[in-house]
Image 1: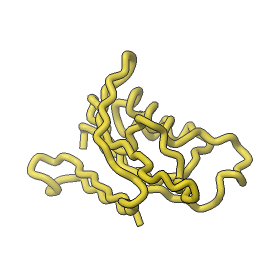
Image 2 (image 1 turned 180 degrees about the vertical axis):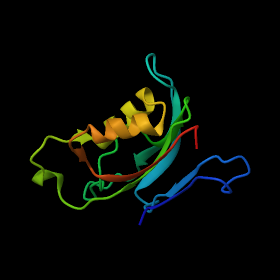
Image 3 (image 1 turned 180 degrees about the horizontal axis):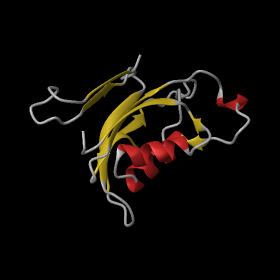
Image 4 (image 1 turned 45 degrees about the vertical axis):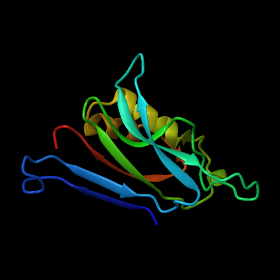
Length: 141
């Protein structure tokens, strides 16, 4: 089971920064690598890239991992996110065409400067696949 933790507010740290953390639960299927993105247009960001780590053809990945996509991270404006997969139903049952979650995260890191910006982006997206729980924090705490 993936685990997310976040804390913010007076008394959490000496200077009031937000803290975010997460643990992925499948070290046998995925390897985690540091991934740095410096787009021509957009905010630079650093995060973790998940790489499917088995060559067994009979074992499908539990979700699609886009090569080079940071799945957790922080951008140059101080916006940070962590995620946990939350599969509740097959995406084949969706009536609305879904945006790949990895593409939404890439757009969030490139274009958003604050939690407010990220929430506007997430709320404006009608459907995402696969579904993830998301914790956000920014430079404002």
